[in-house]
Length: 326
Image (cartoon, rainbow, N blue to C red; front, side, top):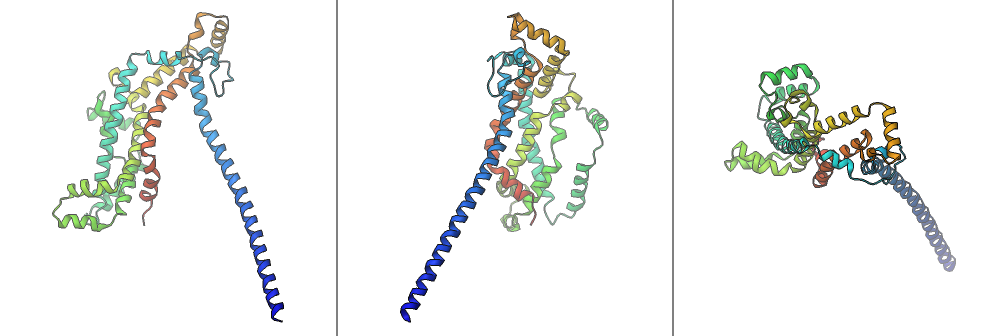
């Protein structure tokens, strides 16, 4: 009987091992299929995301008239630097580049500082006006007076055709204020209380205690602000269009594109240019709207692509911590 029991126990153990092994094989197969689907999906997303940008680079490096024929995918059919040479041959583009770079830096630094210090002030529970002031600020984010009142306000403040019009209206951003304020509210109050006991004033507490703790949120807000400042051109159109030395890079690039489109307004002109190029005429090095547009897109995008990797590691942290209140 004991031998039979031992044999039965061994059979049960063997069956359990076989069942476990079968379950493991099924799990591995299911995981492999699932991982394969995930990887294929991610590869598809990467291709869909990268291809338009890569295609734009190929068109920007292709002869303008040859680009009118279409069919350019991953590589330029007739490689040339003409589009970029013609783009940077414009004298005002360098001054516009300086305006955009300095504007982006100043607007980002001042906006982040002013928004952060306001968020800190309105995050203090002992400040009795924090709720009504926060409500007023949030309402202003949803209700906008419009372009004409905004223009009249800038005119009455004496900011038209001045460099300050790029900086002053952007000192505080309400959306960024909400993110930073929520982030600060998630910090332990003991940090501030300890600093106050040591005799630190509010500004010193903000600069030495709060600022180092909200670096992820500040990095995220800085990215938002820098991208918005770099890509902005409509404020130049509204407030500084009559002063060429204050034109931003995006506004100048838009003007160049518009001029190129006006020169090739009709399809018949484009076809005639293509025929001339095919016969070896002098127009073979001319730019066209599609080629200059591609070159402009690359010039406008590359600076942001260079900056983004330095703040990317803070982006997710800033969004998750600054966007959720416990």
